[in-house]
Image 1 (cartoon, rainbow over the protein chains, first blue to last red):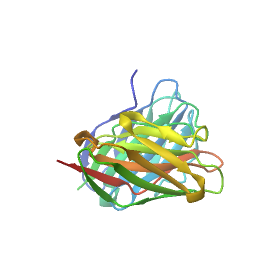
Image 2 (image 1 turned 45 degrees about the vertical axis):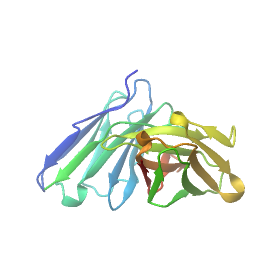
Image 3 (image 1 turned 120 degrees about the vertical axis):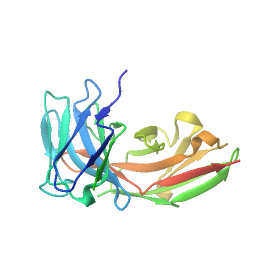
Image 4 (image 1 turned 90 degrees about the vertical axis):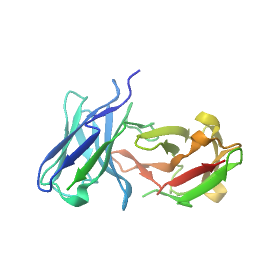
Length: 115
Length: 115
């Protein structure tokens, strides 16, 4: 079956521009997660969705970052006024229920480069 | 909050030799532990998962891990390394925040396999 997909795979943008990153989770998975992977910080949790709601946004680094999920499926992570420190690989994951110990399945990631 | 520590950011083994990647966890409750592998320019792939059903967990590609509560460890092993095992390996713990079961990752261990 289809796994988690993300687009674009690579994004190069100029400092100050807005970017949108897309995630398509595994069909039927109610839980969706965004993580960021960077050289200095490793793998960090950003936000969790259960259905279309985001009960945990604690990992978003600033108010320039936002995310939404529609139809209990596709999610978009938006970064406004990008900064060079936003350069990283953004990974999306989904899991069946979001319960403790539920396996998270990851997409291939979007590599964001801010010039 | 729960955490994991991976000892050794780089490990090099000869093809056919034993692979041992170390992970220690810190948790106030029985943990759910995971090992993921990341090949270059790809997302994370689940190798195996500990859910308290059995202390020795077998995963894909010949990997296994043993949960040792007394040592708070969950080390990953493979009896005989193959060139295709060269990748980065991440240990993770399912950290329930009250609203989300996010994964908290270790800093990763890059495995090099030499002829």
